[in-house]
Length: 262
Length: 262
DNA sequence: AGGTGTGAAATCCTTCACAGCG
DNA sequence: CGCTGTGAAGGATTTCACACCT
Image 1 (cartoon, rainbow over the protein chains, first blue to last red):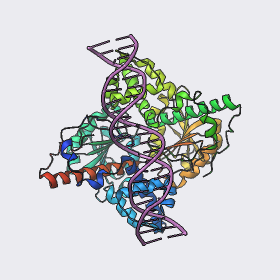
Image 2: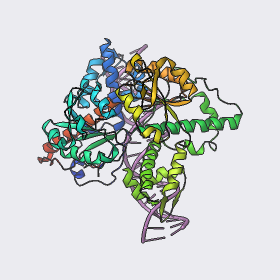
Image 3: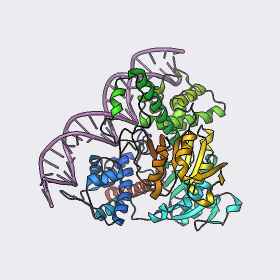
Image 4: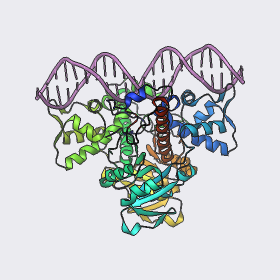
């Protein structure tokens, strides 16, 4: 059972594994890739999108301040993030948009194409199969899988649905590197196992279960219920705080009163 | 521009806001809610799901070790997380499943119902409207919105679609607290503004844009392209490391053999 | 014994603030 | 002069390890 990164803040797998030793002795060789904090990687992807949009609008140069504002972070963080990938800015001027785009794409490994397989062609699977953001950003959808006999061969977003039993052979054949699990939770682990034995290295899991995978496979999870519950927590917290304020100074904070503009 | 929590690791909003000062003097009143780290909140939601499943299987007591394994974290972290909400375990025994469920639900604010509005009834919106996980976990879908005239009044998952222009009045009327944005990016900010002026306090944003909101509104973002790119980064990193090992010791790591521990 | 609860250490991430380059 | 790049400080989170209860 291996690491399962959960939304940026990672963190299990306390003891070292056997092969760990090998890696620990090669800091120089893995310099670039390794040093980037997980959190920074997620933001680089955001910067990339913002930069692409800017580039299409004809912007050629941008300062850390501007890019930071557009990406919703502060400029110190942005500069630190960019410093992880190299020094591509010009002091007194800013960054060249095209250069930054290329460099971020290189670091994120977007120069290679990563074929995607979507498993579970329900509502969510449909949405994912049709999602334009995948192919346009270098993630061609190469295969769709389900168990429903009525779906077999039916093209969704241009790709025919195939049977879950063929995951292994088809993924291997089409060199799928990323598997997306959009099945009911009950079959998610089984599907995951098949993807892994089909050579898939990364899994994006929408099913509300914790998947067990070998160490060399990376899992990211998107859990709608968890997102909702985090929001719920914040509503509750806010209510508590408002309550506390009333208790203490007797004034109730105005409801519609925006505290800060935009 | 207000806080926009991005998948657990948050982190903008450097200066204090007005109300902050007032609150800072009331640690006692907000004791429970405030002290919980953001990262722990996300995990509590996961523990809750695992516990619910256990409860249905008839398990009445569970140790930190067992629960941690089922939730995919290590037991020290789990115990620390649970300690933020109180001391509900029995030394030498473990935790009572039902007690833990109740306490986590209380902390997450799940004792109140949070009505949800989904905006943008495309593939993803459909998937969300039909997603059984919402209502069953205390998040009734109270309204659906779109602009497509063909969709007006059509029931999706039992709820009729209404026009985006009516977001404000309908959200206010039905006391929607959580808005889900599943629109194209071009209209996401406009939709967001309407939700906010309709009194919505929390937003779950699936559109690939950075939303600007007032301080009292909480935004969480789910960005599929970003998730894919993070996975892509890890594939690239792994490839680099494998490469590095070959360079250094002349042995190529076997494919199934994990390269990095964690 | 067996397992929780928690200070303290270690690690990771963010922010500050400023030296230095163009 | 303006803006990048970055050591160093400051926070937050994770992990350790053990006192303490049952």
